[in-house]
Length: 141
Image 1 (cartoon, rainbow, N blue to C red):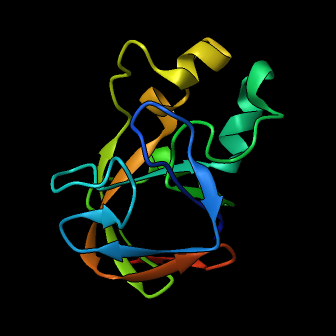
Image 2 (image 1 turned 45 degrees about the vertical axis):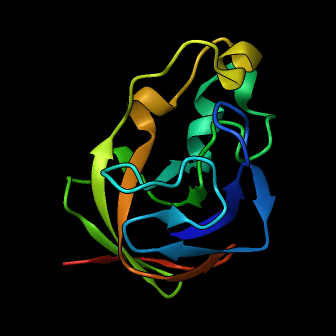
């Protein structure tokens, strides 16, 4: 279980682009990301494997569903709310599974559908720090 891409965007409703590493701040999320804000949805995660379930999306680059963290080897949407994970030097807590997509979204325009409503997850930052591609995801008891 690992991070395969850290992604950010400067404008809401657009795909996120990969960055080498990100700093994740308590009660905020990814510094410099348009979606960063206090609340239950500070950071979004989507499994790389979820791209393959939709025929039109299996060749899209990671970040296309506006996820901050693209993962591999973990079925995110089956984890219970409250699950804590150590990723890089951060500690995060699963706060929401899925979301309601809004109209006028560049991702929906591109692929016609979105996996985030059912398979994307959101976390809050419990301990701030850096996350980069290759960092292991450790589930905590």
